[in-house]
Length: 118
Image 1 (cartoon, one colour):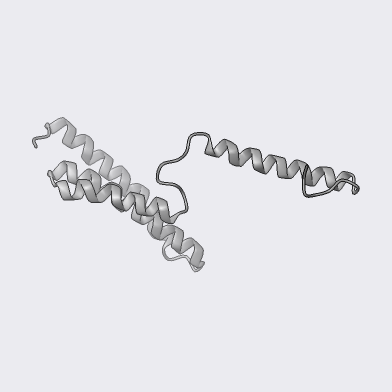
Image 2: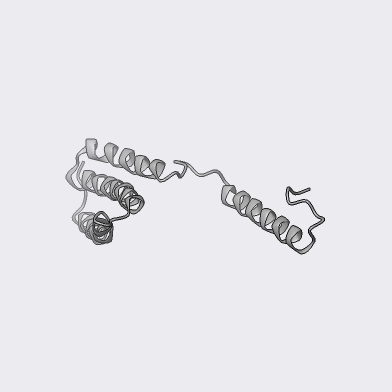
């Protein structure tokens, strides 16, 4: 697989940008709060997967091209997000939160209303 020189420079620029983004993540690894360290580890896995994916294309290594998305998927799954988001899933979550907030406000204004909802 032969990649033209222009695209190789584009890949090099993307790798450098990815390395710059990883600097704050590496600093968060030294945070005393364990939940922030765990989040930083998962973000580091995500960033390392992206770097492996780009490096696989630059160096022509199909193993890295395949291992990169696996690491990115592991990082996303560890953060609690779905690997493939459902269409409209974010809107459903917002509607549920808004409805619960309205029910709480209604019961606070009128104590005779049930707080459980309709």
